[in-house]
Image 1: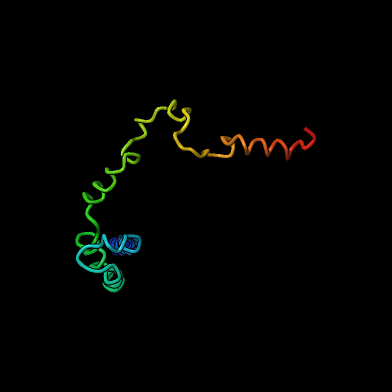
Image 2: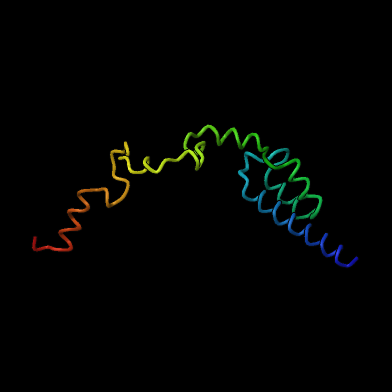
Length: 117
């Protein structure tokens, strides 16, 4: 029976830590039913009950998160949809993506390495 009490204590501590850091990292405008600071106080003071309340009443709804993520076309693509040949194509950006794509940078680098040429 002692191990059961220890297990319940361990689970409640893990739940408390998870709920506290989840509430801490949630943007203030997404917290439901109470302001974010008040949620942090409730979670900290009422250890097992505050964590459960946060998970059911304060945490942002998952459907709202999914709708916000699906609006971005870059995030909507999965790893399975990627084609390696897409990365070899030149970008439409007017600026180089990296120093090895910039011809002027490469010329200056050549001059620094071999100034006699």
